[in-house]
Amino acid sequence: MIKLSCVVAATMGLTAMVLPARAADAPAKPPNILWISTEDISPDLRYYGDEYAITPNLDRFAAQGVRFNAAFSTAPVCAPSRCSIITGMYASSVGGHHMRSDVVPPSFVKCFPEYLRAKGYFCTNNAKTDYNFPAPVTAWDECNNQAHWRHRPDKSQPFFAVFNIMTTHEGHVMNKDGQHTHLLDSLSPSERHDPAKAKLPSYYPDTPKVRAEWARYYDTITLMDKQFAAFLKQLDDDGLAENTIVCFWGDHGRCLPRGKRWPYDSGLRVPLLVRWPGHLEPGSVRDDLVTVMDLAPTSLSVAGITPPSYMQARVIFGPSKSPDPQYVFATRDRMDETFDMMRGARDERFRYIKNFHPELPYAQIVKYGEVAPIMQEWRRLNAEHKLVGPQALFFAPTKSPEELYDEKSDPDEVHNLAADPQYAGDLQRMRIAVEKWMTDIHDLGVIPEDQLKKRMRPTGKKDITAEPQLAMNGNTIAATCPTEGSSIAYTTESGNRRTTHWHLYIRPVEMQKNLRFKAVRLGYEDSAEISVPRK
Picture (cartoon, rainbow, N blue to C red):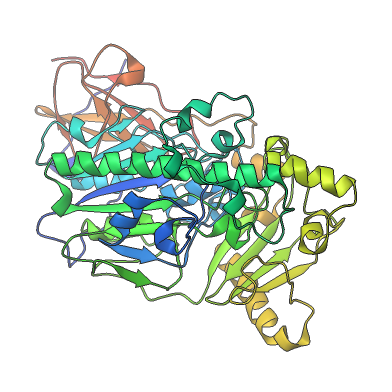
């Protein structure tokens, strides 16, 4: 049962979300935006100077746009990284810094595609979310493994489409049960990587097993390169390439041990290539510091929307580009079942890391990662006391309280300069920068996770978003929700509720058959659905 009441016309202006202002330099024709993301890779592409890589399609694409040489994730693992990307905020600022958690972001935080939907974009995600909170129905027009810009009902409607290529994910490279072997069968012999020619980081032991996994990782990148090209062909086939911004990016660094899960360049530096015909110089290179989190406000900006002020990310291209930063920051917290806490900063030359638990070893066991052949080989050689030089560093019983690396002379980050008097000034400068940043963003990593959970959910259960309150004026329905930070969705579809297309409510809607509403809030259960009876 619902209650409908007549209201004055002024009430009809109410919406469930406060929309950002239209940017002063909004384009006359909003561009389409296509993100093609991939899993668990560093800039291990030929166009980035890696001669071992076989990536002809990405190389060709990079020559058509901008290559970002200094692009980083804000966390070296998927869920915290993607939490920051979908919100435009650091994961440790919204509570999503631990791997695999279900958090309640602050009430003012939205999934940024809502702002694009409110402007008229058709928004699709195919298909990974992994935000450390469930994706609300208000974020996407479609969010499944069939989602595509081609499904928009009006082909003149601008779109924001995301495709996530899983081929390079850690699980595929580890191939622990052999089920992913067939994925690489399509590669020709000339497209396979010779393990004997691999250039390994100095911290890895040089054995056939290590080389084999390193080569397999590159094989998955070559296969991903082919899949990437297929999306570009669809864009060309539809005649949309000229008015579409295409962003290719990785969610964090390479999936191999001491890469993924670790706040070094190997775990944080990612490829970022952007093509925008007529706006970004083909074949150009940028060396300024950026993060993939910055893609959220940037996408809003180029669509003509002023990013909301709460976002901590920056606009990195387009007419409203933000000033270049001196540092980019990153976090490492609980990884699956294993606790740790690290905070760090990167400038154009140095990486600084603060270890909040130096009493813990680097090579703590994370069960999922232990399946990796390199990890198993590394542990075997450590147990046999056969590791030498940089290979042994990862198995130190404790960590240094602080780490400082010169990326120009030490790209493998194996020579810690934190105790070197020559670099005392850089150490102090970056230490202060990290401390200030943690204060500025209200870093929640300093709160024990059990206490943080109690703060988010005092009863131990998820709160439920309040039902929408509906008001009728003639033949239109206005909706509001008393839950702070909520958004409202509506639909007229009936049938399978899991495949229902929910519209984002931004203004009163006309009375229609089967019209129903529900309210959502990040980290809460959705409200009950409210059906509107026909008069």
